[in-house]
Length: 325
Image 1 (cartoon, rainbow, N blue to C red):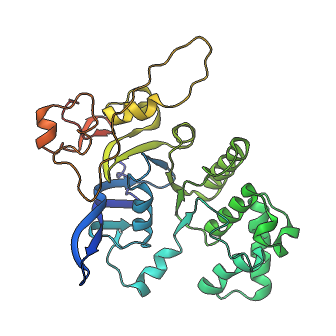
Image 2 (cartoon, rainbow, N blue to C red):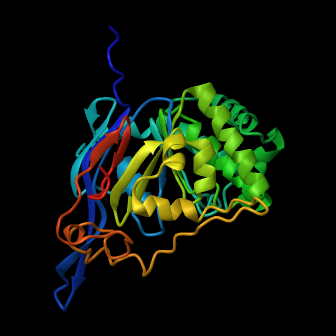
Image 3 (cartoon, rainbow, N blue to C red):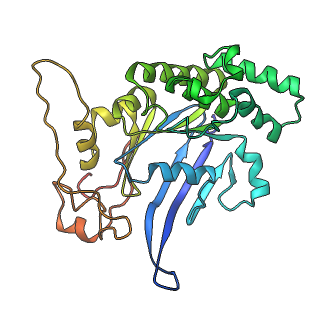
């Protein structure tokens, strides 16, 4: 009998709070609960989409996993080792295996530095390669992401948005990581360029056996790119399911509202749009009970008082809602 696959990444009750300070002495008066009790298992070679409205905590979760933000509570395991409280020196080993592709590739590049030198920095910090070896490796990376040798000596402003994102991808895969977090990696690009970058990401995933956490607000892209989808609301997880299952049979009212907003250009076919009343509540003062009850069309008195349990309602389909059995 085969052993069950161990998760590459595992989150247990991860929280990230930001203190709110005020007064003359700048004392802590409260907390912004950006990420609230997130648990998740991510397996090698899969792509998990993380979706939700702006401000739901999906980017903060990605940064916390990477260690760019320190978790307030909870545990983060990577390859069966807890990394949430590792000292900076010991965490350096894992930094090579966990990388991020940012939303704005231009902002993540030094405008005064040639692209070749920017990519070589990775090898200067983490390897003992000679100058010639670094240059050869950078040229290989440029070719792999669809750029040319002549791009080596150019500056960031000389590239288009799509080309800059290819540079960001090259930098992310330079050290052969196991996990790459894509933080709105295609949202700033034209639709035609988005398709090219998505194809490139898939090709690289197959070649290097990469695992992706794909943070996005574009549910159409997530549907075609990801194996599973995690839906977040106000820092909390509300639904997790295989992509085909989630889009065919969403269970949480918030997920249904999100999916109803996807444009489906079919002439003559009308689609009912679920419109949520009100705005996302203040994460510094979240509502009692279910965090979604203030906007939920099916909320009951129980929803206002009791936080729903995160439960598996079908094989690999998890949801946090009192009204889903």
